[in-house]
Length: 340
Image (tube, rainbow, N blue to C red):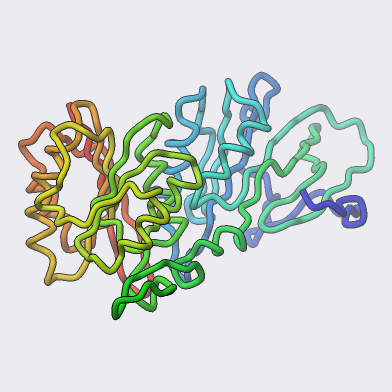
């Protein structure tokens, strides 16, 4: 909610029209707005680095963060990247705090209804949603902004903005991700960690750590993660973001004992010259993850069939499959494998 709310508050026609001429909340049925359980409108991000976000992927992330609470999906408008939910067992303040971990949600608005008694109603627009009182028939509906994504803060951790230490020509130098190698965006890193549905006490491994996108997100959440990468030039940067819990190692020969980790969260190289090495590494990834653990892989689109074939027949079952659009026309997939 903006600090200067009163100065921005103004009387408006309470029927905020959309392009099709309907009220902004006309797709909410009265039963959705009852007092018996808290109701919310959820607005997903419509773009990320110039690429459209897939609605089902954004929805899956939201459900992974809030699905353990009593939640009922009330309505969906995929074309407009929004949905309505009822969530019980968690306060509005807790929703706001947990939403800080979301990568693909732009805003959350609480919805409260009571009888309309003929009084003048006030509301204003911010971002893609209205805030304040709106009239709907014989009811008045109060919309309160619960959460809004801080885009500037999120982008501070983007690979082209943050510094990562690399070793070059015998010296440690500060570099920025895209100038050295492709880096994982902070929104995608949040999504990957969220899909893993961590409890907070897991031991995590990223064996293809690269320039540390997943490490940085885990550090932000105070999660315990170990890093690995075959490139010795990355040692200084990995040491910094993993608190020295790192190794320079080929993912096909990891220097860890069996069943050591609860979860692997990683983005293997997309380059086709590393394709066979990535496929060969899947056996090692399975070896070091305990029974009941998870493996989260962000892979190139043309790796999907081969990766799932490598994991088939093992104790790990495919339990999540989500499409992500990246820069340009690049499409990738987030695969979640769960151990039986």
